Length: 425
Image 1 (cartoon, helix red, strand yellow):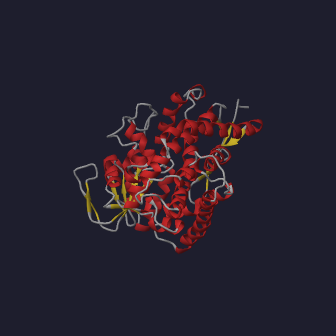
Image 2 (cartoon, helix red, strand yellow):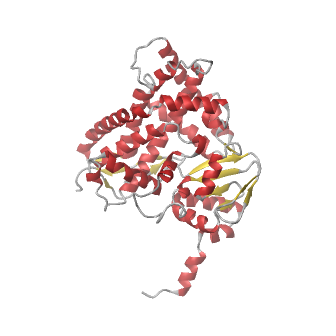
Image 3 (cartoon, helix red, strand yellow):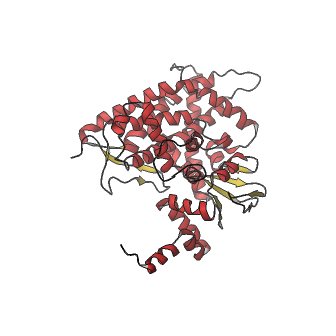
């Protein structure tokens, strides 16, 4: 087939960086926001090769694995930027909004003990049981909403049983979480109206958490294997125990990190796996140990959270994966692309290919990196992997657009993804 030289030259000139450099400052940010949604992999691949650190009028975007991990491991230089929204919602400081201080070290350590790795088999069994119940109910219709109709139901029920939220209204959990997360991940300009919604939702959420703690203190009988009971009984002594307010804040923090992240990750996972009909996923789903590697590779290719943000508190020189150095000035907002880091050619061969030989340190980036990585990552792993494994035991298949496409809320989080079940008609 002959190639039109003029068309080839036009295609070359239409690179992301060419279009970005030719745009005004306002248009540059709009273009980046569009590309983050429409072709983040293509954008990040070009940036890694030609401009691994992209300085924009609003933020600095970091794309190479070495630079992403450097930023995320320098907590005294690149602080968490969630502080205003998160502290407003929780009415106090949380480990995600603290860097290198006693709250972060003490409470993070205690939560890691209480969210015990020994719980994983039980969590998978519970997640599988709840997933099967949702799937059994949906099978006669021949389709299911993998986001809201499957994974959200599993997550909410685990919140009740394992985290200790019995007594809370299940419908309130996402209602509280969404405006707070929107504020946390999108409100770079500290919009007061958005912050007001966070304050309202956070006030209701914290009221519920305090009530749950008070009821448990009053001796209401519940199983003693949930997180709330463990925290109430954590008699470490020496003044290191969490008081009831700190327990309430940490319960709310886990809720914020679990509900939407779990549902979003599972939705992206299902979308990606359905793009690969060549994979024998129905057979692989019979064995969790065989199925799970496909889960994490699919999420590497199509992660829910693409970037983590930090605020630079003092001037810092970042190398950019090349001999070129970039000064990150104090006060700059830094976006580190987890998605790009997991496809960095310096770390993985054929980054666009679906392969199961990816190094563990790459796949762990699904849950962040450094001292703010996900404290409940085992809970997230068990819930997402087992819910989706049970789905693939029912022979899911993609529906045509628009029904079969991910539908998102205004903040960009997945709300719905309807898939077919059983044999295709």
